[in-house]
Amino acid sequence: MRHVGDLFHQKWCERDWLIIGKGPSFDRLGEFNLSSLFESIALNHTIEHVQIDIARAMDLDVVHTCADAIDANVTILVVSLRELYDAVGK
Picture 1 (cartoon, rainbow, N blue to C red):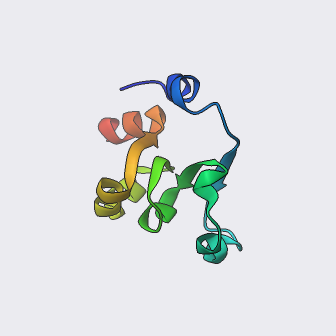
Picture 2: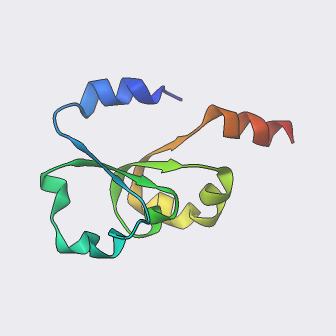
């Protein structure tokens, strides 16, 4: 396990960041070649729709429901330590 801050400083500080969520413009994402302009991070269930270097699962339910997509589409998955601690404590 590594701290996410270490990853940003080592690899992804050259370009601006695009955060991909299921907002009103998500359906238009395929119209643009954003990978040449931005580093990107996908949030929650958008993991199922994009191949991405970094994804953020806000809770462990996302990890369970999107497990196959995470395996196929995500290089690095970021999950809060609080989520992990809470799951282990239950």
